[in-house]
Length: 220
Image 1 (cartoon, rainbow, N blue to C red):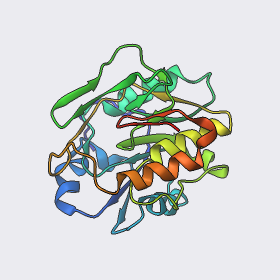
Image 2: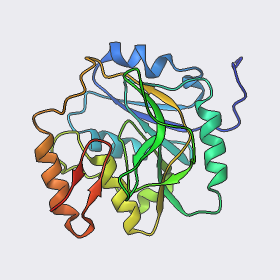
Image 3: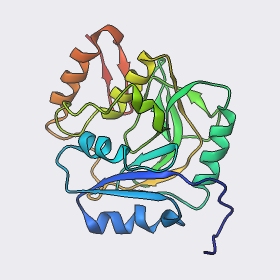
């Protein structure tokens, strides 16, 4: 196999997918995506269950959980390797391309629906929560935590897994791992069921309030 760039490490990649056209135009169009240990979790109604079910099937010690509408450009995996190397002396839990600090500052760098979120400066940067578009972690963390399948709808599971990791004394980071996210319909508004998920997280993590995320802040 001929690669456009040097690949030094193989990763497991997990995606929950229900739209073949979106998957094919975005994630599966990423350079060398099939070099990695790829797991397509099809037609799940609960994305956390899709992720949890995939964990035991993965073959690499670093797992990338990614949305079907994300494209990973040719330098993504090299940036990821470099970021992990920078954190080799830190007991990290969850990494991602976009997050928010406890000071409610955006961290990371993503092309989101044609506009840049954040910047490539001062990364890795410790955060409170990460956006769900891409979540990266070590397989062995799932000896202690799991994606919460009771969260209603498909929101805040990135927030939740970060807070779970924090509870077992792991630090979470936004890293330099630039990717492109394109919502299929281009909408930026929040769905009607968003507040139900938000309230679930508020009650579950009331002892950690305020919680800052890329789309809202959760307070009493």
